[in-house]
Amino acid sequence: MSVYVFGHKSPDTDSVVAALSVADYFGKVTGESYVAAMQGEVTPESKFVLDKFGLTAPQLKTSFAGEKVVLVDHSDLAQSPDDLGSATILGVVDHHKLGDVTTPNPLEMWVWPVGCSCTVVKYMYDYAGIEVPKAIAGAMLCAILSDTVMFKSVTCTPKDKDAAAALAKIAGVTDMMALGMEMFKVKSAVEGASMKDLVFRDYKDFNMSGNKVGIGQLEVVDLSLLDAVKDGLYAEIGKVKAEGRHSVFLLLTDIMKEGSEMLYVSDDASVIEKAFGAKPGDKSVWLDGVMSRKKQVVPNFEKAFA
Image (cartoon, rainbow, N blue to C red; front, side, top):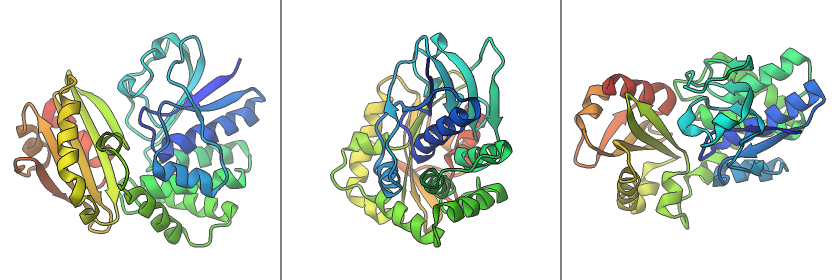
């Protein structure tokens, strides 16, 4: 019986590549069958990464009842399959806060305070004395560059930089920053994408003191690239909120200016000022220096909602 390895809903590059690399790692360590899976379609950025290094996308799978599984890049029920309670969780590999997933059995856990799950995976390979395959190393490098916003994010740690340098050497990448800019130009492209696709390109739901709160993020090399779709994005997050959420926030992150314009719809907009000390406008607020949902946005909102 195969063990499925998968990341959160609306998978980003780290979630996709961590599934591939962790499945490879555990398969080699245990000699058993581990299969990479994902709960949603790949983003343009993830497709670019997979194509560049000749990798096949994980299997699309949304139901895991009765299966043995390993979770990567999350440990929150809201980001897990609806039937996770009927699966057997064997492990978690993550770089976020510990979520509300629980197990009746002991499990293997690698949860580190670093900028990317693939950084953790690199050290797992090192711990086992296993070489990272060249193609997977290249994809893991891209995941680290993506999650740390090319090392600019406050989530970035020396371990991320060390892992990226080692992975670049394995993959034969001589200019990490050039690769990062190539990837972020793909990530910035919005032409031809629906408003729903853009909102859910990197989106997560959270339970904050009993309130369902959605937070999405679009990272672009220049915020002006989103001018033509901003009204459409605002209308779309209004639809998402109407599905039973207290609030929906969409971070429009400018990686060169190192800040985010946050669009919002909320039952109580005062949580924004409580969280960031910034008075919001009718539809949005500029958050200077805010680039990380994980470290700068979610914790602030959790305190504000509490």
